[in-house]
Every structure is written in C-alpha cells, then in structure tokens.
Length: 562
Image 1 (cartoon, helix red, strand yellow):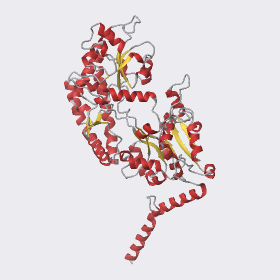
Image 2 (cartoon, one colour; image 1 turned 180 degrees about the vertical axis):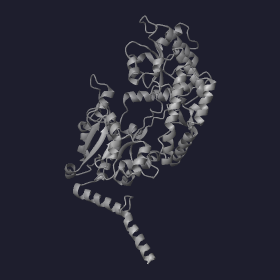
Image 3 (cartoon, one colour; image 1 turned 180 degrees about the horizontal axis):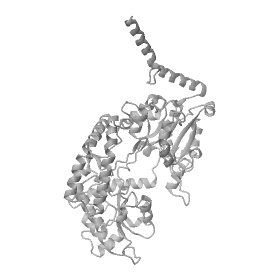
Image 4 (cartoon, one colour; image 1 turned 45 degrees about the vertical axis):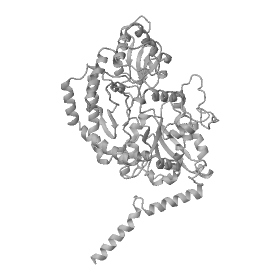
C-alpha cells in the first residue's frame, strides 16, 4: 500500500513539474503556440531584419509600454523622429513613458515591487549585476537568452563576441539584460594634457625653463616633470594673459575624480596606470595601485605642486560645468587635462598636446580608465509580458548599425544626410546655426542600446569630427604610453556570494581611500607613519585582499569565456 501511495505521489510531482515557471516542455509549447498565433494573426516575422515585424493588423492591435528616463534636453521619445521612423519600418507600436533621471531613481524600487502595475520593459534601466541577480531569482525579469531565435542581430553579436556574452551571462547561465556597445577606443584614455604654447614660449624666452626651445612647442611635446614644474611656476608668478593681474592665472587644472580630465595621469609620472577605482588589470592580474609604494611617492610629489599653487586648488572642488566655464573668454589656463581643447577654451589654437609627463625617475605612462565601452543592464523586460517575442524583435532592430547610429546620434534627415556618401556610409549634416553638436544630439537621440563597433565605423557611419580628432590625438600621444599587458577592468559577472561580500566591504574601502587621498593631496602629502597605517588598514579592516580575490576570480572566469 505504501509503495502504491509513493508511486502516486511521484507521478503527481512529475505531472506537476512542467507547469512550473522553469522553462519546461509545456512552457516551450505555450511559447510556440503564442508565436504561431502571432504569425497567423499579425504576420509576425523576425528573420528578415529589413522587413516589417508585424502586418497592418498587428500595428493597430498590439502595443507595448516602455518606461525610460531621459536627458532633460531630449524630446519626449514619442515625438522623436527616429521612433516614428522605427514604427514606420516595423509596424510595432511602442508607447514611451519618459521621466527624469532623478524621478526614475526614486521610482525604481516601487516599479519592481508592484507586480500589478509594471511597464513591459525599462529602457536606460541602469541595472547593476546584483540587482539583476536579485530580481532574476524572484522571477521578475525575463530571461532574454530563452528567446534569442527571435533576435537575429543580437544573436549574431553573441556568436561573434564571446567577451560580450561573458559580460552579460549571469550565474545561472542566462542573460537578463541588453547591452549598450559603443567601441571607439576613447573611454580607456579619458585624459589628454594640453599646454598653452604662447605662455610656454614666454617662459622659454625669459629663461625660466631649461632644455626646451620654442621650436619644441608643437603637438606631441614631451616634457619632464622638472620642465613642467618650471613652466607652471612661471605661469603662477607672471601676468600671462596681460590683464595687469598675476593672481587669475591657473597654472594646471583638471576636474578631480571626474570621468574625464581628471588627475590620474599625473600618477603616470611614477609608472602607475592609475584610475578612479585605483584598480587595473596588469598581465591578467587584478592590481590596486594604492598598494604600490610608488603611489605614496607620486601623491607626495603631486601634493607639493598643489601646496605651491602650481595645481589650481579649485580643481578639487570644481564641477565639470564650472571647469568648462572657467576656460572661456580671457585665457586663464596654462595647462589642463581634458579630451579636447576645443571644448574647454575659447582659443584652442593656442594650446598644444603634450605626451604624458616624464617623472623624476624617468617613468612615462598614461592612465587606463575602467569606464566601459560595453555597458550591461541597459534594457530589461519583465516576465509575463504578452507577445514579448514581438517586443524583443523590435528592440533587436536597435542593434542594426544603421539604426544604432541614429539611436546614438540622431535620425537621418536631422543629424544625418538623406543620402549616403560615396562609400555608402552615413554622413552628418551641417549643424544648424547657433546649435552645438551636443545640443542637436541630446535633443534628437534617445541613446541606450546600440552596437557600434569597428565594422560600423568602417562601413556604416562616419565618426563625428570631434571624435575623430580625439582618436587621432590619443593614438599619437597617449595610447603608445600604455604598457603592453595593462588593460581596464571589464564589466564582470559575480556570483551572489561574491556580490554580497562586495556589498559589505567595497563602499567602505572606496570611502577610506577617497578620504585619505584628498587629505594628502590638499595638505602637503602623506607621512611614513600615515602610509604605514594606511597599508595596514587596506589589508585589514577594509578587506582589500578579499575584494581583490573576488575581482580576480571573476576576471579569470571572464577571460576563460572570452
């Protein structure tokens, strides 16, 4: 009798299994059935990426609600030409609910917590790896990787780019978000050093600097730390801009801890490839620059420049906008870090590009930023969305490079010419009078999920002129000074246990480094005793060894799958 009951119980469990939400055969059959209905009733197709996704009936009867934050300058996405063009080419109707970034940050948890009133997807979702794992385990997020057959563009990317697939794949082997990929080779090197050549020429004429002639003052000039110090000292003490004052010159400026134009390259004078996280990959090893004795030496050297007003102290307080505003009008900048002089100063022709400074010990290297060219967590879909295959196919079109260019910069007819150039590539229109490139772009481009890699830049879309200029300068004067084997830390996937550990320790570590570093730089440097205490705390109460091991394990997994 017991054996019969046991068999009945087992049979009941087996029969019940396919009904669970774990992707069993019954679920597959339901998906196939719903897709068959979409094909039959609405002409749904996904194989021809240039043809409409739905027929006219589908265009009228199906719709999707997408929630998204947007830039304050941007049009409502419903009114953007690119969105209207996408509807015309796909017959998929998307209704956008746009909010500000601050509103989204306030509403984010409420949206995820309200199962009865969610949008179908969130664009510009900004989902961290930890959030994705948390909501995936709660069955809130759609496992996109279960639907790849309906996404030919994205599937091709995953096949051709295992590194991208590795960065997207969660601990359970599934993909829950769509990425933004914009590979131009710019973000890795966010700093270029510019020097006022006219001011430098005056310093040379006055005999204030040795080993340097006016003939040397051209793009690519390589200065030693001693030569730069002599120049900055002269800039500080003299009326360089000719306004009768000697107290409004800013010898060297940057925006402290900004994503670009920051202080990190100054550490290159001591052979360190520093960045804002002080974490970089060196020959496959996760390396923290703050553990290196050279970091102490570099900090003391830079702090001396700050103490002597060679580095403008305001650099440690400025916002990016204030830094840019200070550069306009009367020349006040002697030297500064940024991507291009054209954005910073009114007379960019007066500034030349310097190679990374040569330090006291002969070191000359550039920093390596961890700002990713592959951003994960950009778009997520909620489980249970009706006809989600159609929505996935619609967003898959965003990964067509011709569409990606318009999503990223603005549509044909407004930003790009109607006709392609002689090479069959998109070319930008002349800017309307009184409108900047940024203004035109931000108003007309939703940004978000795109795929712009080498193929796109070589075959589909011409880079913006300013991007070309940045890349040319970086290739000539910055990237040659990044040693082989030094690379940024990529986006990494962590296990839930690793994420919990990072959540417990990493913020405290970052705060500890930040507080000490700004104190040292602003107050003359770090003593031997304070440095010793700092190193003990890094290995002890801030748990840096534990954090470093987690990053190393995650990087090793990434490297093995890429």
